[in-house]
Length: 236
Image (cartoon, rainbow, N blue to C red; front, side, top):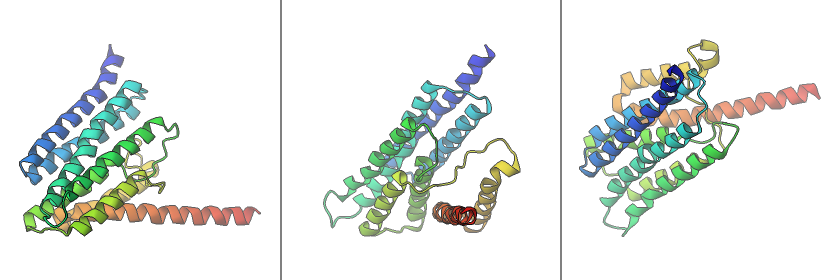
């Protein structure tokens, strides 16, 4: 009985993730970007929490994995596209440009499908929750400051988003393995810097943190490759 409850808890959290994703989309249709981003944050927290509990309880659940991907498609696949759709709709110069926003949903589905069929869970590319957090925070900043971004800039951001979603660039995982410092050193340092940015820049910090996350991952990958080449050179 206890094992069944343990297996069910992560799935319940996943369903709440999906539910909050649906609320977020409904709020976006009414142009309530701030409230929408709040529910997106709830979805993101629940997504991290269900994964953490699955690892903590050592749950290997094929149903849970598929359910998680389906929930993510709504909360982190459709939500960012809806945000960009609204931002591009304000542009009257290029007809039907707003429909290009759904490239994010398409590439999010591609990423999630690849992740599900990959046996070795290497963390390549940008995860769908982090990608969504970028667009969600950007929408709040633009609406609060009453800024309208150029459609060309938005399209560049969309294409970069799609590229990073399915790229082979290794990104360090934000999933914590227990609370040990040694196993989670990079994650703790990243969180400390992120907290500092949040305290100083407030809402503007979110897109900055995500850009920082991408740059840090690329630099860390280059550094690791350099060390590996040095080791090979020494051994030979």
